Amino acid sequence: MKADDLSQTRTTRWPKPCAGLHGIGWKNMPTEVSAGITLAALIIPLNIGYAQVAGLPPVLGLNSAIIPLLVFALFTTSRHVVGSPDASIAALVGATLFALAAPGDPLRVQYAGALAVMCGLLFFVFWYFRLAFLANFLSRAVLVGFISGLGVEVFTNQVRKILGASITDASRLEAFAMQIKESMAGSLQTEGYVVELLALLESIPRANLYSVAISAGTLIAVRLLKQYSPKLPGAHIALILVTAIVATLNLKEKGVSVLGAIPSGPPTISWPAVPPADYLRLLPGAMAVVAITLCEGLLLVRQYSRKHGYKADGDQVLFAYGIANLACGVSGALVTGNSASRSAAMESCGSQSQLPSVIAAGTIALVMLIFTDMLAFLPHAALAGIVANSVLSLIEVHEMRELYRMRRSEFWIAIACLLSVLVLGPLRAVIVDFLLTTIDVVRRASMPGTWVLREASDGSHFVPTESVVVPGDDGFVVYRFGSPLYFANANLFSEEVERLVTHGSTPVRWFALDAEAISDIDTTGAEVLHQLLKLLADRRVTFAMARANPQLLPLLERYELLELIGKHRLYATNRHAVAAFRQECGETTSDPTATQRSADD
Image (cartoon, rainbow, N blue to C red; front, side, top):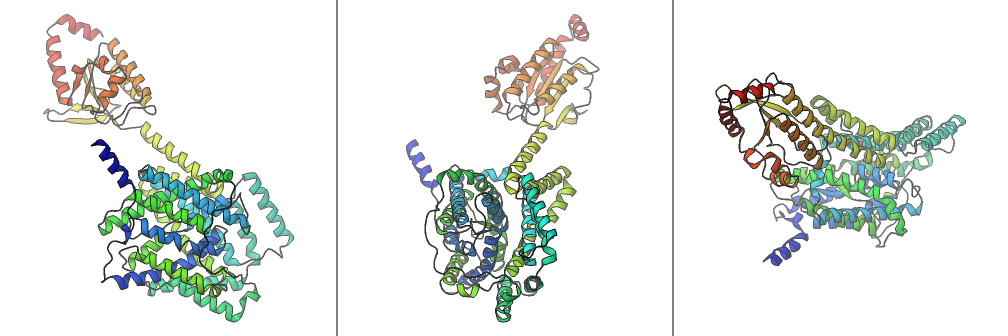
C-alpha cells in the first residue's frame, strides 16, 4: 500500500500538458484567434526593445516568442499569464552579461543562451522540490523597491537611445566626462546608475533632433491609441507609421539609427558554446532572474486563477518556466519570464486560455520567415520610446506612497532596495535586498507582542495589559509571549520574566506562561527557559504553562524541560491555572508559618 502511494505521488509529480488550453470553445474561438494576432503585434516591438536593453541582437527577442512561448503555453496551468521577456528581466540579463562579453561581441549571445539554460535548470529544481512557496518570502517592500530601481535604470538607458547622440564627435569636455565616468565605474566596481546618468548628461548636447521627434511621435501615437482605441495594438501601429516615414524620407542619412538587417528563417537549435566553468559565473544572475520571476509570476498566476475561478498549480508553472528557458537557451532566445502588461492585454481582449500564445508564436514564426526585411528600417529611437513607455509602469510611485502611509519602516526598506539597484547594480542589489528582508524579519521577530493577562472582575475572561505593567497583589502572574521562542527574542523573554518576578509590589508565588503562540523553541530559547526555571525555583515561585501547542510538548521533553516543569503543571487554559493556584493558595494560607515564609521571600 505504501509503495503504491509512493508510486502515485511520483506519478502526479510530472506535469500535465495543455492544462492552460482548457476553457476553449467554438463560441470564443474567434476571440482567441483575434487575441493571438494582437499578442503577436504587442510582442514584436517590445521583445526587440528588451533584447536591446540586454545588449543583445533583436533576433533573440523575436526568437523568445516562438519556441519558448509555445512550450510555456503548452505546459503552464495558468490560462492568462503570458510567458515572455520583460524589462526587469532584460535589465538583469544585461547586468549579468556585463562582465562576460561586451554588446556586439558574438560571445554575448552564447552567454545569454547559457544564462537561459541556468535559469531553466534552477526552475526545474524549484519545481521538483515543490518550492513555489518561497515566493512568499520576498516582502512587498523589497519587490517594489527592486523593480522600481530596475525601472529607473532601464528608463535612463532608453532616454539615451531616444536622444540618438553619436559619440564620434565628442569634444574635449565630453571626453573628460567619459574619463570621469570610467574612473567612477572603476572605483565603484559597478555597472550601475551613476555611469548611465553621466552618459545621458553628456549625450544631451549632441542629441539628434530627428531621433527625438520620432520617439516623441511614437509615444504620442501609442498614448492616443491606448486612450481612444485600447483594443488596437498601438505600439505596432506606431512603429509601422514611423518606419514608413524613416524609409520614405531616408532619415538614416540624417543620423537616425535603424535596426538593420535581421536574419530570416526559423530559430536554429544548438547548445551554447560556453566553457563549463563559466556556468558558475552565471549562477548569481540566474538566481536573481528566477527569484524575480518566481515572485511576480506566481503572484500573477494566483491573481488570475482566483479572478476567473479555476485552479492553477504554481509548481507546474515553475516547470513551464523551466522548459521555456531551456528552449530559450538552445534556440538562441532571450530569457523568458512573465509579462504583466501582455497578460493584462490578453484578459482585456476576452481571452480565456493560452491559445493566443500558440497563435502568436505561429504568427511571429511567419514574420521571421517572410517579413524580416520590413523590420530593417525600424528606428532605435522609436523602439526606445516604446520600451520607456512600458517600463514607466515598473516605477511604482503609487506603491511607494502606500508604503509610506501604511508602514514607514517598509517604505524605507523599499527606498534602500531602489538605491541599491542604482548604486550597486541589480546583481549585488539582490544580495543587499535579501539581507534587508532577513534583517526586517529578525527585527520583527525579536520584538514580539507580550502581555500580562489580568482576570476580569467577573472572572469571565482575561484582559491583556502591557508587559511593562507591574503585576497585581495576588501573587499570581499570567504572561503571554506572542511568538516562537528563539535566539532573536530569547533575551527579551528572559528580561521581562525576571522583571515581572522580581519587581512586583507583592511577592510572586505563581508564574503562568500562556504558550499558545509559542509554536517552536530553539536551543537558545531552551537554555534561557532552563535558567528562568532555576531562577523561579530559587525564589520559590511555582512555574505553570497554559495552552501549550501539541507540537511544543515533544520539544520540551527533548530539551529536558518537561521534567523540570512537571506534567501536572501543564494546563489546558489560563482559567485552569488560576483554579489550581487558588486551590493551592487556600491550602497554604491555613499555615501561618508558610504565609510568613512566603511574605519573607
